[in-house]
Amino acid sequence: MRSVVSEKGQVTIPKPVRERLGLRPGTEIEFQAVGGRLVGHKAASGDPFAKWRGRGKLPRGKTADQYLKEIRGAHRD
Image (cartoon, rainbow, N blue to C red; front, side, top):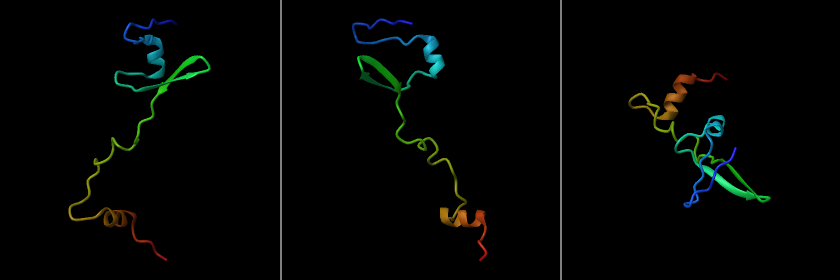
């Protein structure tokens, strides 16, 4: 498949390639020149847990340590 570089330096990634790689609007891609070739790959997100941060709720009046100790049960020696 081929694509043409526009005057602004933009290239359209063909739809079959976007679908195969799961590229959606807003996906960040990193580019490198390797051995005379243009190589692009999805950029790794900085923090894979960022979307989950702040979603959990602790019971009122308990710290995370207290809650974890309660749900895990007391260890018997």
